[in-house]
Image (cartoon, rainbow, N blue to C red; front, side, top):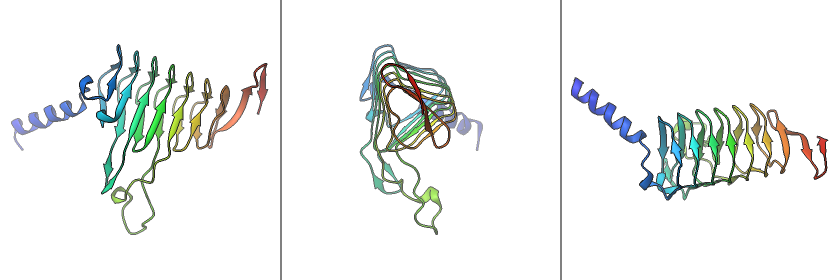
Length: 194
C-alpha cells in the first residue's frame, strides 16, 4: 500500500465520520456534534433543537445486519446534552424526550447480538429482536450507565453512575446498581426510601 492509498483511506474514514445535517430525517436548529462523531443511519434519526453531543458520540441506527432487515427510528427531543463517548445501538425504536442529560460513556440499546447458535461466532449471528426504549423528559443518565431494550425511564428520573437498567424506572425515582433498583422516589409530597 502506497502513500496515496493511505491518504485516500484516511480521507474516506473522515468522510464516513462526518455529520451532514441534510442526511438526517430531522435536524433541529442549533444542534451540534462535537467532532469526532460516528453516525450511521442518519436517514432514520430525528433530532430536536439545541441538542449537543460531546466528542466521540456514536449513533448506530441500522436497517440490516447479517441478512435480517429492520425498520429503525431514533428520536431525540429538544435541549438534550450528551457526554463524551455516548453510544446508541438502534435497530427498532429509541425515543429520548426533551431536556435529557447523559453523562460520559452512557450506552442505550434496543437490541443485542444474537447468541442462539452455539456453532456460529456471535459476530455472524443476527441481532436479537429489538424492544423499544423510552427516556422521558428531564431524565438524567449517570456516567457509565447502560439502558437496555424494553426499558422506559420515567420523567425526571435519575439513573446513578454505572447502573445497568433492565426494567422500567418510575418518574422522579433514583436508581442505582447492576441490575438497577430504586433507591428512593418522590411520591408527590416527599422523598421516600425504596
